[in-house]
Length: 165
Image (tube, rainbow, N blue to C red; front, side, top):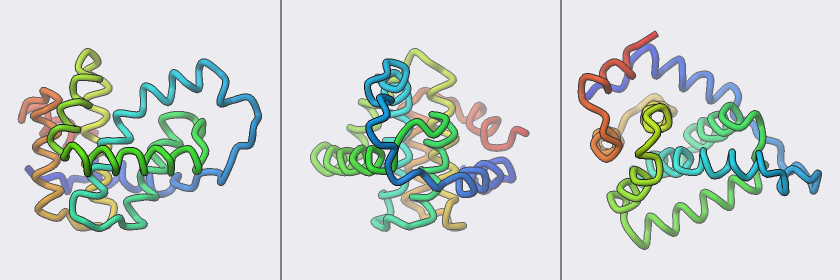
């Protein structure tokens, strides 16, 4: 599966461009806001998929981290502070180490199985993170295929998602 497409490059570029999160949003009450909690719960599986992609090759590159920050900024309208995101990434790392990548993909797939748009968004974001450093390692390519399989995205739909625009 070739994820080095113009669509994924444009998505990657948009994520990297917007990838600077505020260091901290303070105690403005946003953390207590139900909309914030709902947003975090909705995007959490997508963040975890991006984290798995970032870490699968054993290198946690700055470009990939910036792409994840950009995705979160876009998905939540800047609703997650960098410190909160860093905590989430730390938790996802511990889960991946304890359970393994495939088990995490299965768990994430179950969480977002009812929402086709969320599954396809997570798939596209994972592909963009894989391209963040302008190289797609073999482990990243294989993980993109696993994401598609666990999320029930057909190879035809994968091609559509990777090439559309």
